[in-house]
Length: 137
Image 1 (cartoon, rainbow, N blue to C red):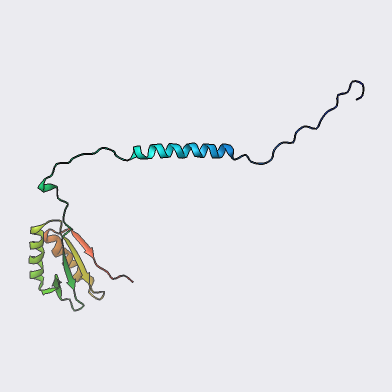
Image 2 (cartoon, helix red, strand yellow):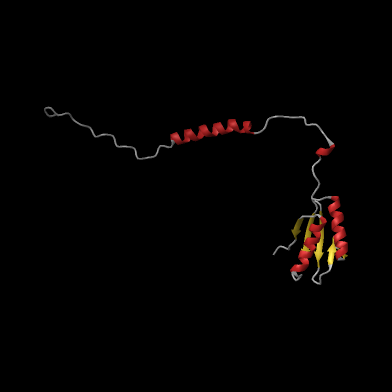
């Protein structure tokens, strides 16, 4: 020891490793909060609902199938019909339910005009829901 001098020890080196303990603590707290609040998110209200005839689930949507063969022949629900019979059949289907869907199956060689005529007959009968049926590739 020299006169007026204090011996200095080397300062501790900084720790360069990442301390993951606080991260794990925070994550565990979040998991506990999630475990506690998850049952509260589900509805725990138990009701004894009344029963009624009108509360039945709706039936599957009704549809009629209209087919157009390559030669231009018309089919209603796979039965050959004329243009007048098609219009009458579509009107009957619309009379049963306005939500009836027309599933149009036309050959790829059918002229576009024929398809438009069938669509017009369906709309004239009051059926506005028209679906085009196609084969998957």
